[in-house]
Image 1 (cartoon, rainbow over the protein chains, first blue to last red):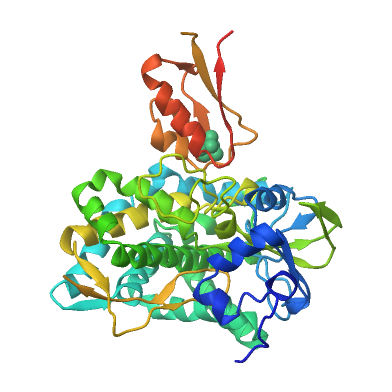
Image 2 (cartoon, chains in turn yellow, green):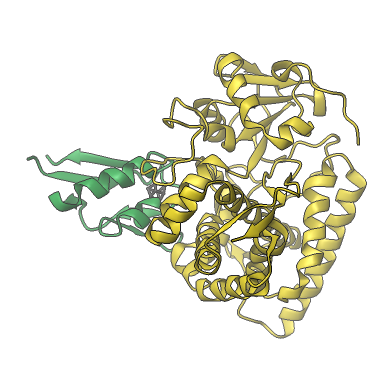
Length: 393
Length: 69
Ligand code: SF4
């Protein structure tokens, strides 16, 4: 697919432009100083605030900004709700409360041993070789398996899940036909699974959510399918991207790597810093009422790319924002969003990233980028390495 | 040294759980993962630094450290 090249990021940006996909940070740094709210006519009109303050203001403003569309696409598809992420108040709170208990730090702790076992098994699979693709062979495999376990689906279904995610989050930006087909397939898949649990309930999230009620009423089938689809998609792509970025950084910074090997207690702090510097997720909002943010008018009907990654690089809030400092103690980063749509999977993601680093560093303390191969990045609003060839030793 | 208190603004808290991770002595989470201060929030001198750390890491700026009246 060839897209017209971007000549001016402030008035004509395109987040699918290869330069943005490859390394968006210099573009955002420039915008932040020159044009803190950029705009493009592409995708039927999109705003891009790059300062923390403005991102925060949009995230908190549910009166002017709706979550009913959360991905900027070339052609807006018919509305496909995935509550609570696509819900606005007042429906949002009950839909979110339905999911929260399964994702508290205590609930997530129960999944830690299994996650550790998955990571250890994966590392053992390639530790004896000269290298691996840290994105495809490791980062990608972890969340797919953990989410499968939580939903009560076979771990081996990974390929199927990954195909849907690629179709929904990447190809679907410009190809509504592919998007709708993938949506249909996920629904059909979950319907079968829900049916199975009706006769024989299990100890998993599908069973739990199929019995969920709001105000004493069972939730609709659309609500249930939307929530399950959300958990599957949001639980995999984002975490895979975050884990991949950690390894991309460590493969190029031996001093940080050695420090984490020597001082494993620093891993949780480092994880927060990786999340800040390489935050994978940009959400979108639809402007539903004209409003002014950061001195710029936002017109109803257009979209906003709500870039938590750009906010996290704002030097007004984070000293040395462009530097990754794994010992950074004060880190109020917004990688998991701000306000009512704070990512419900944040505790799960933190656990997976931490365990992924621990288990790998224990067995493979030395690794670097393979100079003969190329790192590639995802396209779209979840950012992370898709191919990350590394050599061990 | 004045006595200090920590407090979670429950309207602002969105359950990022940073406070409970960084200062489990001072904060606890409810069944939905939202935070509240333990007990009446009195902050022993030995935990002042932890309280500031939790405050500096709360993305919603929901943690207050105040002088006790
Ligand atoms: S860190 Fe802030 S938002 Fe998160 S649980 Fe604590 S008080 Fe709530």
